[in-house]
Image 1 (cartoon, helix red, strand yellow):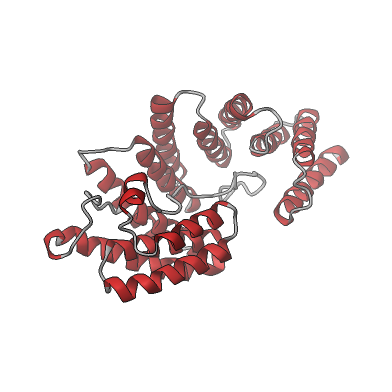
Image 2 (cartoon, one colour; image 1 turned 180 degrees about the vertical axis):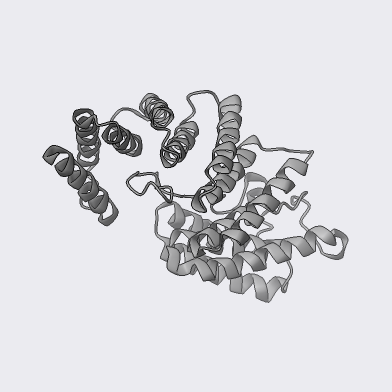
Length: 317
């Protein structure tokens, strides 16, 4: 996980939880109403494999076909634009402006279709047009771009729509949107509001999916980071220990997702002057990286170096 603004030593990224690619569901696949569906399926495969350039190429080609066939206002075009935006979000901060552009267009199309459903020919399988998936991705793009006011507006609109949906309220969508709202509060230093949103998100996840659901571990790491920012070290340690316990139980003690909690625990031990315990936690984190053969990847190299430098610092104290 990434760091909160005033706790840069923590290894707990300020990531956002947003729907990724909005591709064919089972009903749509059967009816094949999706123009260029083959290209979209290819894009999903490339996306799942981490080949975002190939995914983008397939989606752009599909979009060209859809625009020629369907015109400017169609749900297929909105879905594809949303998928392109999701790919841009995965491609890094330099693509944030492109992500915002396509996601805003996708959202505008959906809003037109939702406001005037009888004016356009919607597929019978498309019973309800939702905005919150696109709003969450758009909010994430604004976060990456550093526009936290617009990001918060998107996430709050997403939450409003989800909670107003009487037919099919998705608890996970509510929890993820609250997580995003909490993340923005955290980024601007509003830690009390951030903590409230994340605790709400955690309660929903654990109530619906169990106390030991792996999603809870991610939220607990964020909650621990907020407590660290507030210098509530005991509460931070409790959150990190619980997150680590859940991750170990769900995924195994050598799984890579254990590393953030271990590193963050080391930071708490360091603040408490417990250097031996901090070094032990860091050593375990480093060993997990090496067992997973991630040390040769650029991102992992940076994290490995960060762990090693902290270990050296603590050993010298």
